[in-house]
Image 1 (cartoon, rainbow, N blue to C red):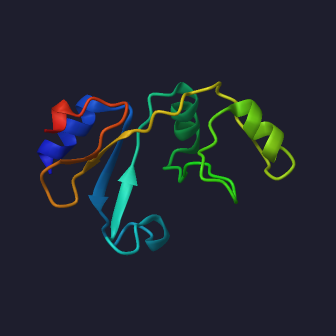
Image 2: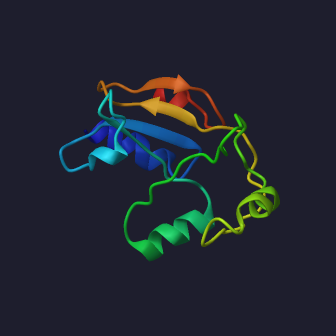
Length: 125
């Protein structure tokens, strides 16, 4: 939809997560199993943007919550200390904070603000 595309274009990169209905082109493992939706981010982070450009395709990621914890890990030094022997690569982009993204749901057509985070929700209201 052109209106949704314009909203995304005008507000990315930025601190938003956008939810859309999945299509048959979206692999099932990338979709929310119950809602058949997919979340998309275009972060305002040069390391992430450079990595995406080098890969030439989308990157699947998630928040880092270690087993037995309910806290999202965000400090790169703590992450390295806990995981350096368990993963192949850790990119240290510095401490990025813990403020979640603002989540905008386009899955039913009109944008709906699902969660207010660090992104200004007013363009989507």
